[in-house]
Length: 230
Image (cartoon, rainbow, N blue to C red):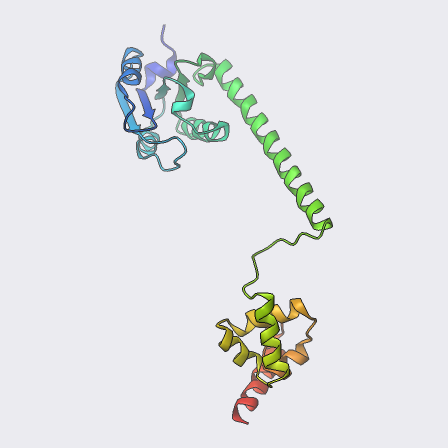
């Protein structure tokens, strides 16, 4: 006796192999034998996020349809991916079943319960990963490890810039131009290597638009304009 979901809609089959050398014949034959009236199949690795036929099938779903696969690994890349796909199928009012894993039949109460348990386990694993990552970062910071993007300028370039500014009297803007970076980049590099006050930076002709107030920025710009006129 067929379940109500299968009787109410279409049985849609999805088949996938990872390479062009592999054959879809066996999967198609199993899905045909299972009663699928429309098949979606593709030759594409499961690690790819963009699987056109899978996307087309999901868009094609109507309430009461049942998506059938020979094995769950033909449908999803991971447990999280399986749960996301199953949720999208459920939102469409459709069901999911696997011929090799009868416990994963969301047209039955038992199958829905199993996937609900899987979703809880996946969320628990995700929280553990977040906690371990946070603990690892804190431990690394305690050891002196610095996070964030790599500096644009090398220590040698920063030292050269400081010579240009302190010994040759160049403005930070001029030094930044010689090094091929924006003046705010050079200012941040100087600040990291040696504490530089905003007033000193303005005296040298540089300012950080993202760190100073509008009034300080205007004052810095005026100071730089006066230097250029001189």
